[in-house]
Amino acid sequence: MEKTQIDRKKVKGIIMILTCQKYKVSRIKRFKLPKDEYEGWKIIYILGNLFLEKDYELENNILKIKTEDSYLHLFKKVVLGEKYLDQIFDIEEGILKVDDDIILNEKNLINFLNSDKKEFIGKIKSKKDIINFDKNLLKKNYKNNFMINYYFKKDEEFKNKYNGMHNLNMIKLRKYNIYNYYADKIGTSGGIYYISKKCYKILINFMEKINFDIFYFDNMSKSYPFLIEDGGTSFILLMSNINMYHNDNMYSDINEENKLSLGYHTNLFKTKKNKINLEILNKINNII
Image (tube, rainbow, N blue to C red; front, side, top):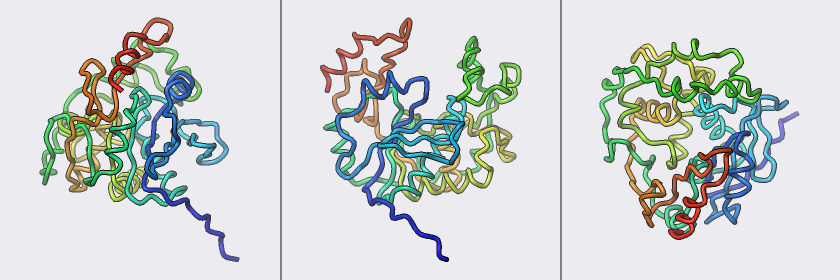
């Protein structure tokens, strides 16, 4: 008997908003966009849940994925999200990846969705396009204590059952402090970026070959390229001869008051007791 093929819904693209169990109420329910679809681009929120009985579960516009939900595992969650979205939907153009601490400007979002796009568009750290990159430069590594500093005095992150970090601690984490220099220093920032169908399939194929292991040690660069999400994306695409294009208006800090930005990095909840920063919220309302 032939296996029945499930018809995938055709969409222009997906707006993939990355969130987690920790912030699913404060960041999704309170600040979600008023529509679930813009110009043929469907909005899907991504959550990690290690306790799912299947690889993924789509409920309305929330896609739960059987994976760790920690910041450390974010790159894995991003690429798995791209993999399962490509299985669920027939995507024409690509995916706009958005962090959940960014509030989108609807007007600028629509303009971007309707525009012509390169294979990859992001807020490049070097503030210029990366064209015909010399892959030999990716052999360079450097020490970076970013993740160690992030998890310092955050014992609750190791104990959170959704994070899948019970076998880790600060001592073990110190081992993984060698990052890829150029992927981290000149590659894309993580807040918002557009990735074409061709490019996200490159990411999926690469990560499938290493079993989605974020602790994978790259022998060429003698580094751990996949511990930071934007660095992992940049490393694989630069290795794959993909040109990365800079757009300074992909997102901005709310204090910049850039009316052309697709979104605004808010840090609304980085206050005592996770309360909303009303001063920042008022700035956003004035801009949008």
